[in-house]
Length: 237
Length: 226
Length: 77
Image (cartoon, rainbow over all chains, first blue to last red; front, side):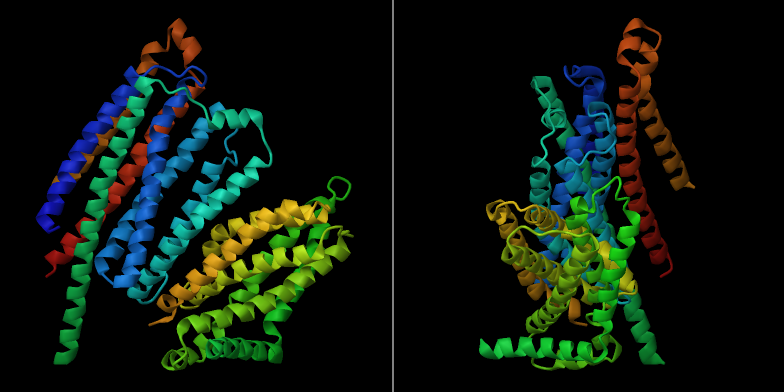
């Protein structure tokens, strides 16, 4: 994709995203009925689930792009990985903050070692490691390689982590909590609202992902240009 | 194949020889194990909590924290003396170097784990009614998984400005399956439960160890090359 | 100057949306229905949506900041 195409895509996807977000807000606050068992707080569901969806898409992107980046060495894959990681970080944080807001009313406690929330917390720290390691090297190229290694290891580990956490949880059946984990009778309008939520978040993600990817590209070009200037000056000197 | 294993063993042997000259890492890890046992003793009110109930958890956390102490220095020698450049120029395949380091660390950490079990058994009067072979297998596989991840990340930490303080932040989230399966299995074995109940844990720990030893071997060259 | 206006308008717009979300609360506050259905859960929902706006907005802001730095560097050419 060349620059013009990217700018155009960012704009179009962004505009569509904003429109869908507005539609989502109208549906959530003025249209969809309140769910019977959980009440008003269930409306958090319509952003909580899409947030997880994007968090995992971002995470998958990081893993995939990191693996191919190490294999092929193409800089653009690292840029895609970083953009995916930032998206993943943002949406994992959203999930981690909205989950307890829901849980406090639905389950009575702010935090519950529920498998998805637990895996998400660990995922957040893996993302943190990705960014810490990127910045911690003297040589930025090495930082990118290190981050890619973390991306790959993370993708390999997260399924194991989720399985282990779910298994541990299943050892102590807690009837009240478990029923809250599989809550809803989704009727048609709720299904439609969730669909719109997923679409809205996906559009916003796509737009911002491309924007971040493009900006990373500009930064890279400027870095290369600066490096060449320094090299040229050194030759002249 | 035999030549490859000989290479791996050469790396391990070198590291172990260096360690046995100074006992630096072993001393640090060993003293840590004993002192943590002492501190735990002071931190548990035995009128309210039975140490036997939480022994497995304490043991595994001590092994992990103490392991971090020792593992962080895996590549320090190479980095300090600039030996790394020399190793990179030698014909040794990098995954063999990695496996050699992993094996060395595994031996050291297994020694520490043994000490931890012994010390905690003594301090908290733990009685063991399970199958010792299975316990050794559980701890061994858990330690292998731990070591394979930590060795890879230790190479990264050595070459970054944040150094060893970065290591726990990177590794702890990834170790959750080891802690979950290892500690629950240890709990069950201490309680004398039948070995069958621990079979699943063994399989998961083995899977973890295999996956991350292979992944580490494959990814090591990206971490060590300039 | 132009960028400052854009960011001020954007912030105003976002605040406007947040307040619109809360409008059913104001509308129902005095009524009998309000007594039953409002209160804590509604504020949780409101906070959750606000969090989404703030975090996504924060990401947008960081991307825009990077872009501005790139433009500055281009300007120094």
